[in-house]
Each structure stands twice: as structure tokens, then as C-alpha cells.
Length: 122
Image (cartoon, rainbow, N blue to C red; front, side, top):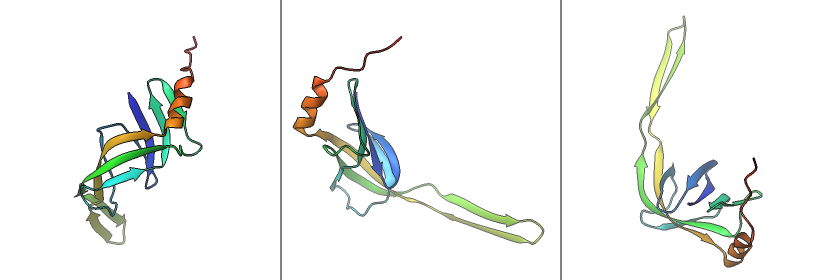
């Protein structure tokens, strides 16, 4: 199974081909493609590649499926003995992304394939 960990908006998401993730709203129109290039980790069939801090030769192609609103979050403030009570709420805005492809540059593939998988120790 091939997957990657990508950094978007200060958060990290584990993605694989065909997966759908919800991220904070981005200003890209529906049905357009996005290239995610802040890849922190890449794993494929026992081969692991870790970025320092990112992997420059790995890119992830994703498609914007929809822009949605999240569930309502209620926030309440209260101070005892002074009759202070405030309640408000908001709905966060999200963008749904479908991961189409994880692209690796050809030179990177050769170096990864030539290395042996890590041996299991007892």
C-alpha cells in the first residue's frame, strides 16, 4: 500500500490514491486540480522515505470535489456571580479533496528501489 503524509494549512494529513480528505477552505474552484508539494513522508511496500523537512521530488495531484460547511460549533462564556453569559457559534468552512495520483520523479524511484527494505530485528 502506498501512502504519503502531506502538510496543508499547518496540519498533516495521511493520503493515498483515491482517498477523500477535508481541509480548511482554499480559494480554488470546484473540479480544478491542485498540486500538493509539501510531502513529509512517503511509504510504498516497505520502502520509507522521510523528508528533511519535505521531499522535493514527490508531488500529489488532487481534485477539488466540493466546498462545504462543517457542523455548528457552540462557544459559551460564563462568569459566576456577575450575571455574565455569552453564547455564540460558527460553522467552519471546508474543502473536500480527492487524491488522484502520487507522483515521484524517475531519479527518486531508482534510488528507492535499489535500497533493501529494513530488516526486522528480534
